[in-house]
Length: 113
Image (tube, rainbow, N blue to C red):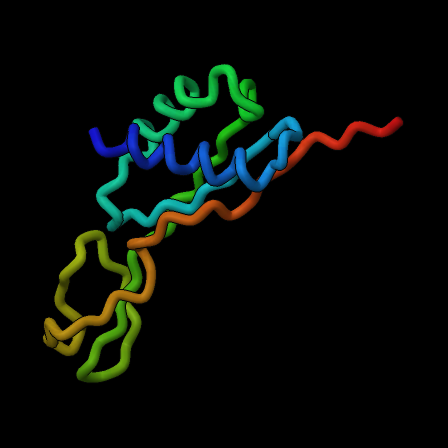
């Protein structure tokens, strides 16, 4: 399960950016073509955040659909695999979205004194 290593890296990056402040929420974007299982990331997140500034934080995962552009006719098509066939019959597709893994937002608890 490579999701454990990925989640540990996410927790490390968020912890570094939080600079010791309590994290309330993390938003990830995961492409549907990335071979990363969102449910596994969620499971690992709950484990990896124990005893950190992310303990108890909410993890929101947004899945990004696969989108490709045909090199032949320029059409953009939705793909559910890293390959496909355009309406014009071409298999020469360039992926536009679907492979990403991004930490999109970090919500930090601000303490007002």
